[in-house]
Image (cartoon, rainbow, N blue to C red; front, side, top):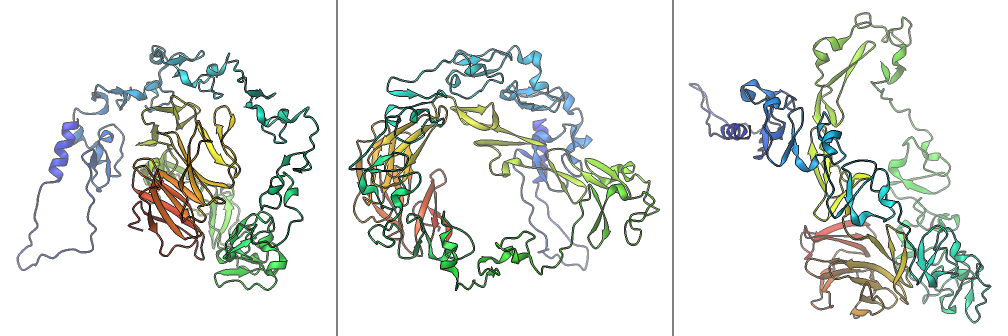
Length: 604
């Protein structure tokens, strides 16, 4: 079969030329679009559509004109007679799928023959796999046992674990393990609060004490950061003190004295401060909305496109007043259109009673007629008869084109369909994983590492913590930081990089010995709100809101270079795609935006 397709492709690329009859001239037709070529793994339909070669002669019409099932090319080569390759599994229907798709708990053959219980029971798990109990042939990696995630369909990989906490840990009532030093620290680390039960009464002079008895150094009082859960440490503080403000000159300081927003966001109809102080009447009494905004009756502003959107966006609902009635579109599957947007239920059509103004719902020539009996109504897949009409529909995994034809949905073009590798198939798709990963049995669109456990790193200004995504165990990586803000991690070397906006420096430290930090950048840096690492070429990238620059250096702080300095205003978050050579960043300036450029600063 494959050789037959190659021959067809070869024929389709033969050179040809055009001539004209006597007394006629040959001209170039500039109105026709060039036909995009199909790849060597594709077949060109009669309408120039490209489909996978594996779809040809499989007894299913994938070309709208049916040319993929043309008897002239399928003689002796129908799906029933097809021979699959050595690394493929042949479905009962004749379809060929990769051998690795057999017995993977997901039906890839339309007849389900790849998941036949009798065939799958013969499968045995390898030495580095765990055999699930209730279903023969179901295997998961040994490293997935006792990780708090049920990977076997019966959950047998999480039974008889009896895991206990280490000697330097505290066992919560819910079984969670936390560090001993987190017990009785007025922070609910166990989630069930068992680490804060039966704690001694704690007085903390000369330190500052919150209402919940939490103690911290007095220097943290009125420092612009909430350390008490009720915010007591930031109450009664001086209203304006330049030394305590984190905000820049073109930013507005919210009433909580910690959050900063751009001044352009002040009184724009959207509450950007956590306390909503940027939209208070005190600040917005004399505000006039921009030309691209709508001003509500209470003087607040909302984006102009929300005016008459069918949903009240002004606090007083004034944006939906004096709006014309929109023309209603009827749902052809459940409603009948009388004209001018008037819709009635299909049950009221052809019932012998007038429901539309001009008896449109009682057409004598269409009531009782099933259009689907005539050539399936012209529908490629399904024809659904309705009173006085009909409509076409498609099988799952297809979408309707031109009201009658069905086109395969390429789910791989939809972001998020698969976490790693996506393979489009007719009427569906398949997710696969890179080496070192397996599909998560609980969600086959996601991949899970065969070995090791995932952790999340995050900065809490005063420290950098790590939380296990499997056991929800939280540990402190770096202590006694002043204002740790942006961070990134190099998996290969186990090195953490972070910026400290108070110290005005960038540090690095091993993840296992985080307190042995090394200064990477200490000069000519103001406010680094964003940081990212290039793990391929060993570079760090950072934004500087104070200097309005994007810079890079190597992991030792050498080979420093300014990449972006023009037409940038308040660059903050930054992300890299080293595989493709792109960097992305947010700009919080007068004209907020997200930008992209090459990792060398070019092609911005």
